[in-house]
Image 1 (tube, rainbow, N blue to C red):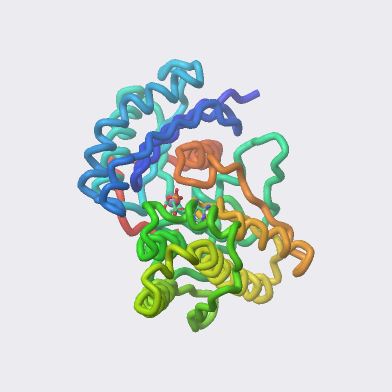
Image 2 (cartoon, rainbow, N blue to C red):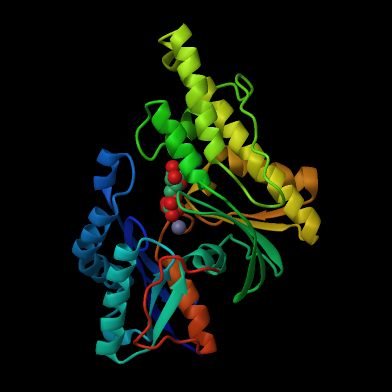
Length: 338
Ligand code: KG4
Ligand code: ZN
C-alpha cells in the first residue's frame, strides 16, 4: 500500500521544530527550544526569528537523521503558515518553500491551531483518537480556544480568550510571585504542596464560551501588594498555597466553560492540547469530568501537546491524502484564523 514520508516544520513562536512522519506514525520529533527568552521574562520576537535562522538547518537535518531517511525520499513538505510571530513564521515558510521547490515535491501549509487539535490523530500505541464530532480545548502561552471539530478539516471556534491566554495567566502570575519564566510548570509543582482553597480569587464574568484572564493577574497583583504590606514575607511563607489557589481558580474557569460548551453542543468527547494541558490539576479535573459529567476525555502525549513539528507533519499527511497543496506564492499570516 502507500508509503508516504512527510517533513513537518514549525517555527511560529520560540521553538524551532522538525518532524518526519511515515504514514500516520512519527519517526522523529526534534525541537530546539530558545532559552534566550528566559532572561527577558517573555518572548522577544526579534531574538526568536534570529534563533530560528540559526536552528532551522540543524533541526531539519537532525529530524531526517533520526528518521533514517534522506530528503529525496520525502513526498511533501508541511510547514506552519500561521498564526504566530511574523518574523518567526517567515523563517519556516521560506525554508519550506525552498526545500519543496528544490526537491520538486508538494508544499503543504498548516494552521498551527488546527495542528494542536489534529495532533490527536498521530498514530500512537495506547492512544485512542477522539471520534467526530468532538470539542477541543487548546490552551497554551499563546492560545485559549474551544473548538467544535466536525472532521479533520471542518472546525468552528465557539469560544476564545478576549485578552490573555491561559499560559500567560500562569506566567504573569508567576512573575508577580518572583518565579522564573515560564512559570506554569513551577506553579503546578508548588500547587501540589499547597491548599487550593487558602485564598480566593474571583472568576471573571465573561458571557458565553469566551474567556478572560487579564483580570486575574491584576487581582493577584493587588492581593500580593496588600498582603506584603502587612507581612513582607507573605509570598515566601505562603507560596505553595498561593500557587495552589491560582491553579484552582484557572482550572475552575476552564472547566466551567467546558461544561457550558458540552451542554450547548451536546458533545461529550473532549480533547485537549497546548502546553498548559501538561498541568496536573487541569488533567485531573478533566479525568474527574468523565465520572462527574459523563465526558470522554483525550490527552495526547506531552511531546505532542507543546509546540512541536509532529503535529504539523500529521496535518501534512492528512492534507497530502486529500491533495490539499499550497502554491509557491503562499505567504505566512500572523493572524491566521481556524
Ligand atoms: O504550547 P506551549 O509550549 O507554547 C505556546 O505557548 O504555544 O505552551 C507554553 C505555555 C507556557 O505559558 C507555560 O507556562 C505553560 O504552557 N505550561 C504550563 C505547564 N507546563 C507548561 N502551565 C501550567 N502548568 C504546567 N504544568
Ligand atoms: Zn502552540
